[in-house]
Length: 108
Image (cartoon, rainbow, N blue to C red; front, side):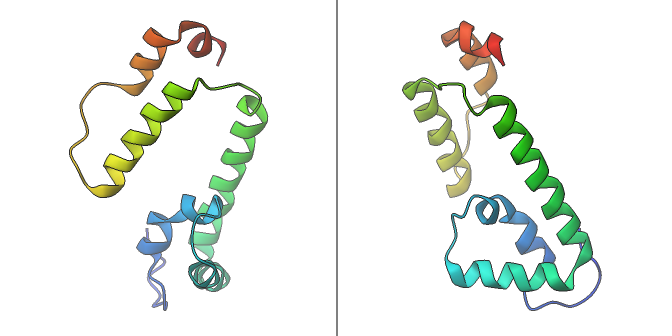
């Protein structure tokens, strides 16, 4: 997505790193660039608002569930693989979670 207008920080960069911004997982200097971009770009600001609302909804609905440590470790490992550009096994994490933790998967 792009608004078609030139920006110091490209729309694609903002959208590629939107969850890092939402989760406060980026340096302050990058946060500042994103905030400036949102002031200039209404499509990206709208996408940010939508993703922020979804994140709040998920937290409200699922935020109190305890996630088993080994499941969290598996998911984080897969995220690290994706971020590093490595091949990710085809096995579905959701299927693994349902098989390994049926009570947790069924409660969601």
